[in-house]
Image (cartoon, rainbow, N blue to C red):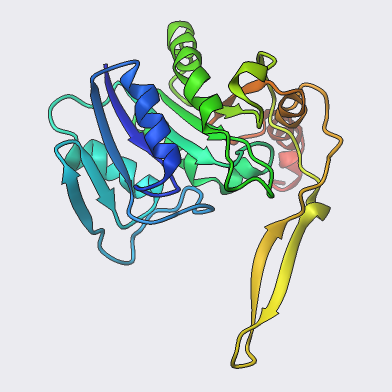
Length: 257
């Protein structure tokens, strides 16, 4: 099996090292194409207003000055030699990608691009609290990652679906199981903009999030993570909302009289 790895934390991120360890348990044919620097929050953006710069680090390892989407597209169309990848893994992200995070996530976007290119794709993230940046529990993803991926590959999933996996912020031995979870909804009141002033008196801003407990909907990814479970969420690329489509189709004649 040929595996392509990418991320949004950058080519030197510790989570990418963890992902390489996970991938090595599944195959010896592993390629890495990741951003040259951090692209967190880049979502599914594509670089079209300037050229992409790439540097080869080793035989099957490349850094791209671009987004995760750029990396996957460049990898599949130009860098990975011979047959295309059989599997794309994106991550392991430093921090969770659940609930509304999914729409901002470069990690999830890397898996989206793989799915668009007809490659089975999985995004993987390691939950951490905002106050736990330096002590991210990489061992949890490292211990459980290969087993979860192997299970998912055995079961399979449709071609227009990607899988989003999140590991809880607990030691590997304290994981309470693996749960299928629906995408949750965050409390947006926890989002804050921190205004500061630089030495020249010019204001600037940091977007951040308060590290506070939430009351999520049962069976959501937020609730399952709070229960110390690994979450598995299938995400559909087709964003059409069928109920609204059906409702509007009943009344569209009013515009066409």
